[in-house]
Length: 231
Image (cartoon, rainbow, N blue to C red; front, side):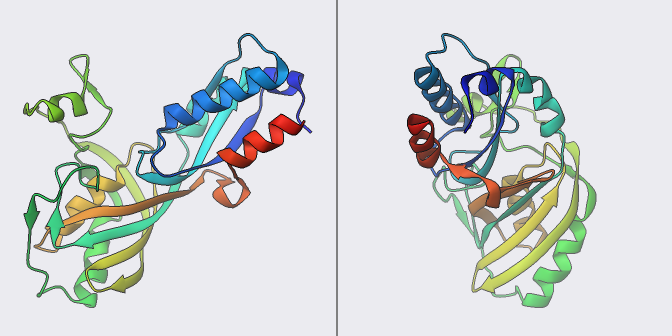
């Protein structure tokens, strides 16, 4: 049982974020539940690494004095699993936006797919998606995108230590990636499609690890709420 003093002194909560929730919504919900359960007027709660609304999986949430460790957790290696859909692209590189272009996949073989992954191992240059929360000139990139404005985005160096193709089912490729902080799996999917002389977008994403933290040890928001209300 976790007590009021434990949350205030600092806890690391492993949450399995559901689909269509923002990381901000998850933090706000847990903060509210903790405050209500223990009659706390104010408590610091923050997450160690954003997950897109269309992604599920591990969200590391810190309370109290453990929020000082957020930067440390954010800098750790992350693992993701998901699905890349070949033959079409979207402006957001995932399913947040509609398909805008389609491409032939008739030339793509299993050998080509496996060989192409090798191009993305190690330090690579990556352009963040225009539909992202990164800031430029005081505005979020997605604000420029939704307004139909073009903006110059600088590439940045990220590291991908593992890029494994788990299953190929027609034009859908299930994968596992181990990568550094700041890596956009949506951008990886888009770039992977280009490298195959086709197009691609991310159709499914789940974060499974952050450093030594694993999603198998996490709880759903629903179960967290159920547990804290019975403590």
